Amino acid sequence: MFCRNCGSEIDDRAVFCPHCGVATSNEMQPASGKTNTMSVVGLVLAFFFPIVGLVLSIIGLRQCREKGESGRGLAIAGIVISILEIISVIVICIVYAIVIVGILNAAGGGTV
Ligand SMILES: [Zn+2]
Image 1 (cartoon, protein in one colour):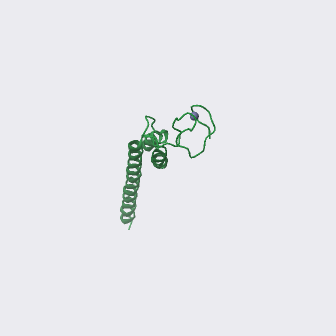
Image 2 (image 1 turned 90 degrees about the horizontal axis):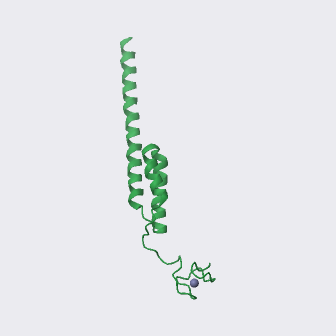
Image 3 (image 1 turned 45 degrees about the horizontal axis):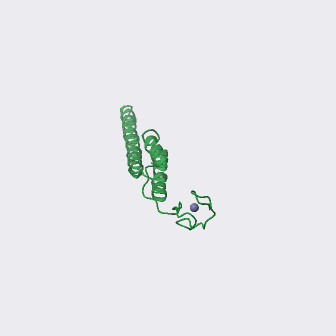
């Protein structure tokens, strides 16, 4: 790779450029001000498309860990909201199913 400061070719594993002493991208960077995009998108989509939001939030959480970006809280919030929405959709479906079965049973019982 090449030094981002002086442009010299340096070892891929180098933490500092031997020519100018500037830290390379290999250096473990503390959580920068940059927020992971995937976490933000995942959190927003969690409200509208829970399954998509869940997948993107999990990806965002992984990217935050790997790249040291901020936004872990957003990713975790996206995962929690997605799961809650998926559960509520399942509960609503079950309630509807019970109501429909109940109506069918009542109708069937009345004709006997
Ligand atoms: Zn350099």
